[in-house]
Amino acid sequence: MVVLYCKGVMEMNKKVETTIQNTKVMEKSEDLSPKDRYNIILKLYKGLVDNLEDLHTKSKDTKQTTKVSQLAYKVDRIAAGLHYTLDFENEKTKSISENFRELYRHIRFAMKMVYEKQEFKFIDSSRDIAKTLYESWVKIKPTI
Image (cartoon, rainbow, N blue to C red; front, side, top):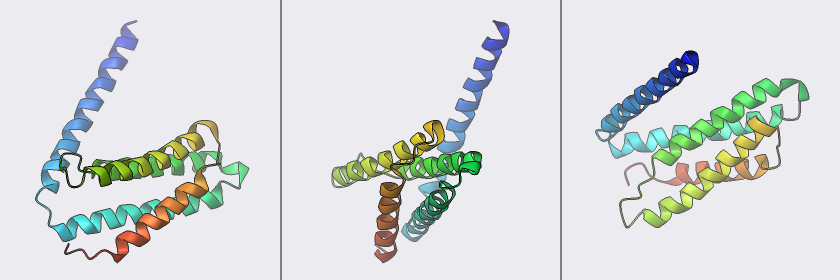
């Protein structure tokens, strides 16, 4: 019982530490220029596309289940990072943010299906979403 309690306390400390680190990152991100923010999101979209393509090719090989699960988890984390960039407080961007949230949720759900159940039926739709987002973001000027 003591071991479980200690383990729970350690987990809680990790969560608090992560929250503090994320808060520091958020505070620093407010100092970024629009061009820097554009480039960060561009890199996240590029990572999303590249990792989904890699996941798609590796998903056909049944011997690489560990690598596939790791890639799916990585894609899930990238989509979660993109989710944190959304602005729900601004009334002008709220509906757009809600639409993006649904796209990121779809990708995250697809990745959870991969790394929890080894089901790959949503990979193609996730790849299409990621490609469209990346191609659209590349066309936007970073000075906007």
